[in-house]
Length: 338
Ligand code: AHM
Ligand code: MG
Image 1 (cartoon, rainbow, N blue to C red):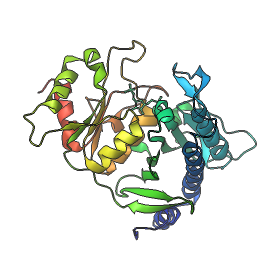
Image 2: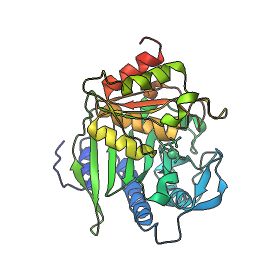
Image 3: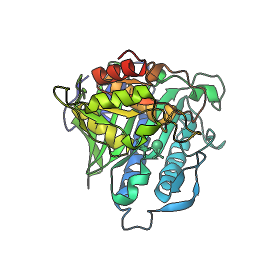
């Protein structure tokens, strides 16, 4: 595929479409609208400090977590703009307990959008980078309205996945799957276009960063503790260093570019969340699709994240993701082989 630094993301997507003779343009229109949505969210995130949009809405989401005003804004924007497009048959969002129906007055399409509209929003009030995570599947049922089975597909079946990071710059990082690479586009403020800035991102085979919330040490299994002790050991040459923001998109993005491992293991802190905090469908799977295409790996400690057969929409999963060698090592510790 012909690409060059500075090309717009739309050109890039059209270029990919031209390579696929069966493409109808539906997928291109879907991604293009998602990009518009991200620009709107980005603008709102950037002015959050001065507009009265920080803070809590005063209620909890389906999973008992505080909902921020911006979470709600991002979720609403995605549902409203993506719903009328004609390319989707349903939307699944971290913020909604059930699948979101496409209103009867709009046409429906053959794709499923799964998203975390604003991940890491507990960091918002202190100006830390946050993001929107997305995953796209093709519908597999013959129902006009998608059924749960269209959404609960294993991660390797995603047709595209990625994230927008609202940081010192706004970026879009995504892949359309095996052989297509992972590419990063940076939003040029004022112009409003995402331009190719990081072509064909490859994550180093082994990193030097480990990212985990170590305050859960006493709630982890012995194997997880030994793994984290390993990363802290002065015997590693070169030594690892710790970096943890507590915003998945930011932690993941840094490790993708620099190498390293991000971990959110199971813990016993909250009996309602025995598998950790992160969700398979809207967080782990899209990130796993990206990292795998960039030459890295994602595991739940037992097997590749992308091979897990999902059982529930809001299922949580332990996550070990990043440089291949580091994640393989994590698996060995978790399986008691080290
Ligand atoms: P959220 O989807 O409610 O924002 O929660 C997910 C976030 C991730 O961005 C981050 O990796 C994780 O929560 C941090 O959790 P913790 O504070 O337990 O370390
Ligand atoms: Mg989230």
